[in-house]
View 1 (spheres, rainbow, N blue to C red):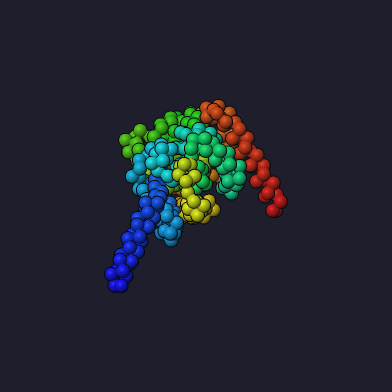
View 2: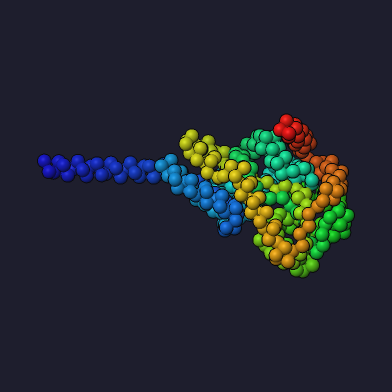
Length: 341
């Protein structure tokens, strides 16, 4: 009797271990590739993702978080995503435009009158179109996230468009930026944000464009003491997944993956509140902060609009269609504002 009992217990243990092993083999791993600096809003977003996965281990989906640049440049991360070496990435607009050039339309200079207008157009009009375009590349476009807006830094303020003429400045490599600043006859130098400080120190450039985070975090403010809040181009990022990986998830796993990263409103709020605090702190770091008045912004906007045809032609593809979609969204947003007032 005792022998039978012992045998039964042993058999049950073997069966339990076997089931556990099968379950372990059945678990999936989602590897995230991104670049974020500790104690920034983007790092807090990844902490939210980690917490969500830790709270749902029973779903059989594990997380590998590589968000300190371990997976290479943004372009390298996108290539890895397409090959399913990474399953989830955060991609800045400029890198995404290397794959979907029409994304650059969203960075037409002075395209949006306000941040709420830009949010509405991106979410309600641009997102469905770009989701379809990324799907053709085997990528699922989950949602927009936020990196801020581009401003101008240098050894002087930039209150009118003529102030950049012949000015040696760092310009982003996107079509919107390159065609625009060349049209302004700036002495445009194309480089990544990581090369800005050294180029300022050597005199290769005297200023340029950058989002607030890079101006502050990389120490640009120590070399270029004037920061003009032109907000001439938005800098949305995208949350992208490998489509094959997504298709292989259960409904419960999909819900976890799609909700773990903060939604657009929460992510934008977190970034913008942090950016506003950084900008408020800049004068204390010796920075002269400049804001455009209504007349100055109108002059910048009028000049910028004259460059749109050349930029759209340079982008090519469905750029004209995307631009018209943006205009349609702006009309819809204006109508909503009128109804609410």
